[in-house]
Length: 274
Image (cartoon, rainbow, N blue to C red):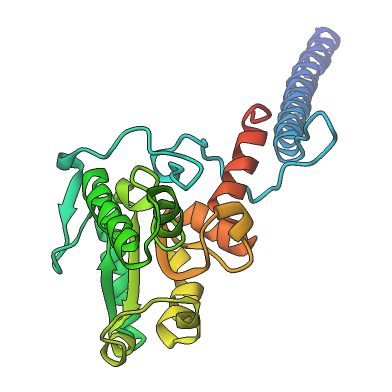
């Protein structure tokens, strides 16, 4: 009898040991599978991220890693220039009037006010010279200038128009039609230049230098930079700012680009984005 009980006890211990071993085996195996799965997923994610960052075009050129993921047709990037006529004028309900009476696209008003406030903290009081202008108003001013040149310089109509274009933008081709462009100077300079004759020498003024360094923090760029006249078709204007959004402005400024060059990059890589 005792032998039977002893044998039964041994059997029970053996069975218990088996189940303990089997349970531990399952846990360890499950942990190993989970670990393997996690490693696979992590590897897959890393591979996908690396693939996105390392995308290249058919020629093997690599997409700049810091190039913003923004579409070239974004409203902030609309291109209006001597070579690109505005396709559609901004509607009146999209405009807002700033405290100084100038009008801009209401989507950029807060950004401009923030720029102005930051400049004031740096002891620079910005003065807005020009902002939104309708095509009709530009046409009126342009035609007045042409008529003036015809009478004063005794020029024919075509010659007068050609000369007018040297200092003015033809109606329909001005960035001011968009409501996204502003001409800005500092009041200290303005007080010493009542005739407000703007030329590239203004770039040496503290106000212009501050704008060059800081405008991008608020989404603005110096639209017509020095040395890029062959691209913009406009002479250097350190006072002319254009809103493009913070991300785009910082990229353009960092890489010393024009809006035209930036759009070319965006358009090139749109077809290769993941």
